[in-house]
Amino acid sequence: MAPREVPPCGRMPTLMSSVPSDRDLSGFVFGGYLVTRPVERAELSKAGLLLERVTTASDCLAKFLPDTWALSWSADEERRAECVAAFGIELERVNQLVSLVDDLFNAQRVLWARFVTDMDAVASILRAAAPKNDCVLLGLALHESLVDSFVKDVGEVQAPESMIVGQLTKRLPIPEGGTLLGYEILGFELGATNAHSWLCNNLHETLADRHGERPGPLGLLTDYSTADRWADEATREQPGEPLLWLPWALVQFPLPRW
Image (cartoon, rainbow, N blue to C red; front, side, top):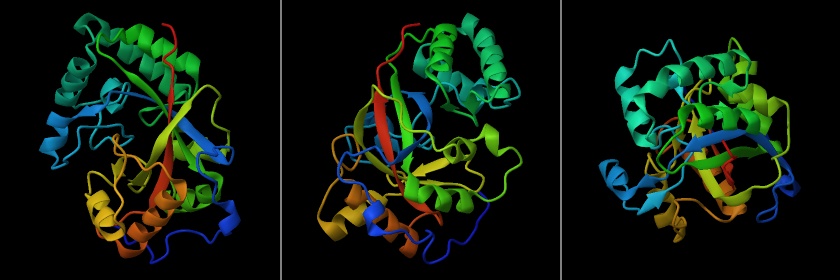
């Protein structure tokens, strides 16, 4: 990651009235769907996390279908093999899957490189991959009052329409049919390529010890105002990665038939 300094207050000023009440998602902007698998205790222990299982949008901890490994120009064969095995994808299906993901990426229906814009594209990916292992379909969303701060922090990118930043600027609502799991504090690298979780930076321990409150069983916060306040503290104090930390809503959707 290219190092950068985040100003003491990385957000644009907003009115307190813009903070949603608990579990009110009407003011959130949809960033895309994510097909993933919960991260189990054995994998979390390697990262020094004492949690049974987490659901996360961070590629530091979780694997996604698709991601950069599913693009034809990916040179990371080791990562591809890991993800194919994790999702239980038969090897003879990989070439077909990669060709499909290339087409969806070029059509801006897969955004760099794991965010999927529509449910039909999700279904086509699952149909091509036919994963044998259980998957979870998440939606990632950011409150509308924080979108401008996120876009400014990402900086200039060559093709914003092919990335989550372009999706957020469309200011689309969260699709119907999902269930809110909670809020995850995430910090994106410059260019919005990789997302770091407060979990992989152990910010959850620092903030929980300070405030005497722990994340839920999935590693998520259930109260938006708490997530918003803690994210702002992490951005101002920078105890971990020098990033703009923001509270993102994680919404689970039923998997489409494929």
